[in-house]
Image (tube, rainbow, N blue to C red):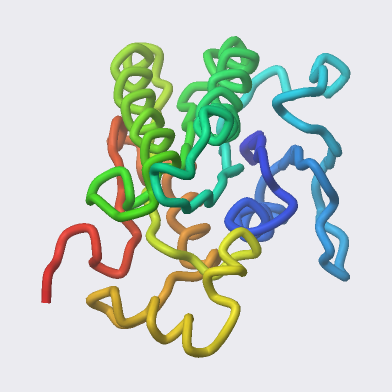
Length: 232
């Protein structure tokens, strides 16, 4: 049974991953708010803001086998309407939060025989999309961080990978998928003619945390309905 820490376990992909892992591993979850799920999760849960709160009172496992950083943002605006604060806020949520928790738990990860860290990028970091300047900048930074840390910690058997989804049906994307017409239009932009769901992506997270992915590190894995690679 592995020790796994999931940041952002309260909703979306973080919650879907927590559900996948809760009965097979020891999971410690941190989120700004509790999940609205009717069934309580079988995890240690702490209601914290990763960017603002002190984490010293959390009993992190001494040996940590997996870390998932799932918080994110969708801030889509024309470039001339994006403020400096928009860029700062997206960078803090997507990048600085990940850096903070990785630095804090690095000693714990080093004690594992085979640790794995999973971060999240976006297809928008790979292909140019209008109105994505702020979020694409932050997610591109995550891809650079992923590769740099993967190289730095390879000798210590700590694997670092990132998943780069396209539009996924989560609470974060609710405004973009608020009507059947919007959902259909979004689906048609993808070669597979569908939008993603959190459960599909969670299964990739589980794989990257498992020993089955022990020869995979420094990778940006697109789960994007083909939009990042195909033109049809």
